[in-house]
Image (tube, rainbow, N blue to C red):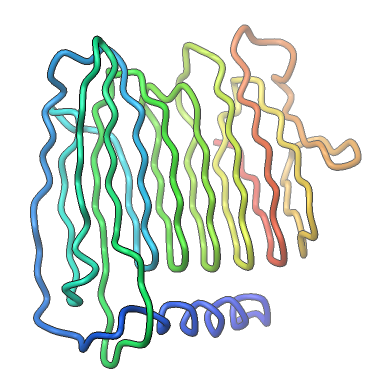
Length: 234
């Protein structure tokens, strides 16, 4: 294990331990299903304090999946409202305070609809994020993450431009990007290292061979602290 990974693990465990002042209880799994209704586009806001978050496509409804947790206070609140032809889906974990004792477990497995235009905003405190957004009709993506690791897959076909903003703290991130769509990644902040593979570097900006040559562009802005970023083409 590298020193960076070790420090991530130690800090992550510390932050995850500062959870609700409740004992760990029985593990529960609850299902998620949200119907689209009359909405033609949806703003999705996910707020998770700590744990493991997995997002992918494939939902027949607007969203489906499951939540698994063993601290009652971590039960997420789901709210969906439609105004006109626009929907707003909010999934939030209650705020934490104090310390839990035992083997904490908090996992969200969420699938989203591939066809519906989505504006996706994630606020994630500590833990692991696995975001496979291939095939999803994402119009914008905003990720605010504290301590932990992030795997984000933006590869695959895309018909429209995509703006992505990632604001992270201590941790490690891997971003998968398409090889045949123009990609521009700007990295700001005190990054420990940037492993850009075959991307071209110009100061703090990284581009692929297709950048400026395709009608569609993915523009990624990373503002991060201590840690590392891995950029990989697929």
